Amino acid sequence: MARFYWYVIFETLKIFAITLFAATSLIMTGGVLQQLIAEGLGVLAILQLIPYILPVALQFTVPVAILFAACSVYGSMSADNEILALKSVGISPGRAMAPTLILAFLLSPMAVWASDLAMSWGMPGINRVVMHSIEDVVYRVLRNHRSYSTSRGFSIHVQDVQDRWLINPTINLFPENGKAMTITALRGQLRLDPEHETLRIQLENAQWEMGGKVMGSFPGTTEEEIPLTLAARKASGKKSPAQYSLSEMSAQYSQQQDEIKLLEDQLTTMCGIEIMAGRFDQLDTSKSNDILVAMSDGKRRLTRINTEPYRRWALGFSCFFFVWLGIPLAIWMKSADYWTSFGACFLPILVAYYPLFALGFDRAKNGVWPGYMVWLGDVVLFLIGLWFMRKAYRN
Image (cartoon, rainbow, N blue to C red; front, side, top):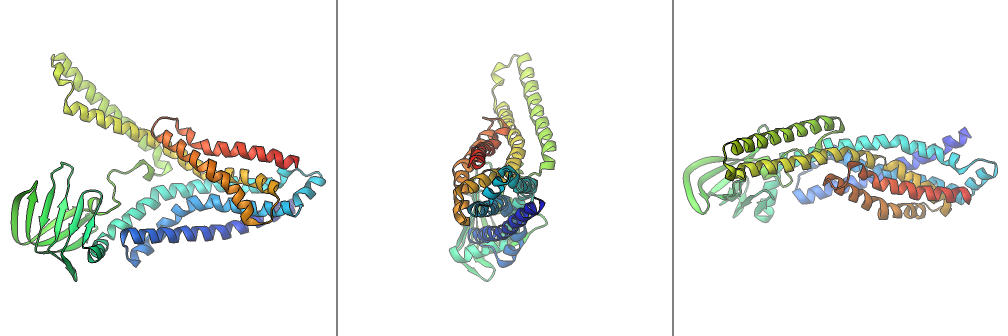
C-alpha cells in the first residue's frame, strides 16, 4: 500500500508542478501586459514588476493547479478500474484518496502564505513600481495623447512634446479643499524625486489661477512639486487593511480600537462641556460631525481588519476543499480525459464557491455578517464533496 501512496503522490505532484508553472506564467504574462497597457510602463519597470506579480498569481493558481492534478490522477485511475480493483481487495476509496487529501491540506498553509505575501508585499510593490515609473509614464502618454490625468484630480495637457520639453503645458490640480488650481506655462520639464516621493515640474513663464482668478505670474523658471500619490493613476492614500501582513493584523486591530476610543472620549468631553454650559445649540456642529464621520470610518476599517485574516485563510484552504470535491467527483465520472474531469469539477466551484466566497467577504467586511462567514464557500464545497464521497463509496 505504501508503494501505491507514493505512486499517487508522485503523479499528483508531477501534474501539479506542470500545471502550476503554465497557469502562473499565463497569469503573470496577462498581468504584465495589463500593466503595460494601462500604465504605459517601460521594459525596465515591467521586469521590476515580475517578482511582485508572482505571489499575486500564485494565490489563484495553486488551488486550481492542485485541483487539476487530483482530477487528472483519480479520473484516470477510475477509468482504468484501479479504484474498483482496490475495493475488490477490501481497500476503501477513502484510503486511496488519503494521500492527495493530505497533500492538499499541507499545501493549504503555503497558499495562505502566498495570499498574505501577495496582499502585504506584492500589491504594494506593484503600486510602488508604477509610482516610481511615473516620469516615463507621463512623458509616454503625453507624446501619444497630449493629455494625462488621474482619478485624484491631477491632469496635464500639452500642445506638443519636444525631446523632454512640454510645450504650452496646462496643469490642473483639485486639492481636497475643493478650489481648483490651474497652472499654465510657456514650456516645462518633468523630473521624478524618488527620495521625497514627488514629481517635480520645472516651468518657464508660469501663471497660477485659482477659482478662475489669476493668483500670480512668475517670469523665468519656477518649480512645482506634485506628490506621487496624486500623480500616479493607481495611487492610494492611507494604507489599506489589505496591505498588512497577518502578523501585523493584531497590532493594527488594537491601534484602530484605541483611535476609536480616543474619538469617543473627545466627543464625550466636548458634548459634556456644552451641556454643562447650557449651550445645547452647539452640540450639533461641524466639529462634532467630523468626529462622528471619523468614528464611522474607523469602525468600518476595524471591521475590515477583522475580516481580512478570515479571507486569506479561507482562500488558502480552498486548496483542500477543491480537492475534497474534485477527487470523488472524478472517481464517480470515470473519465480518462483530463479536461473533462477538471471541467466537471471546476464547474460547481465557479457556480458555488467563488460567488459564495465573494458574498461572504462582502457582507463580512461591511459588518453585516461575522468575519467567519468568509468560509461560506468552503463549507458548501465540503458538503457537496461529502455527498460525492458517499457516491464514490457506493459505486
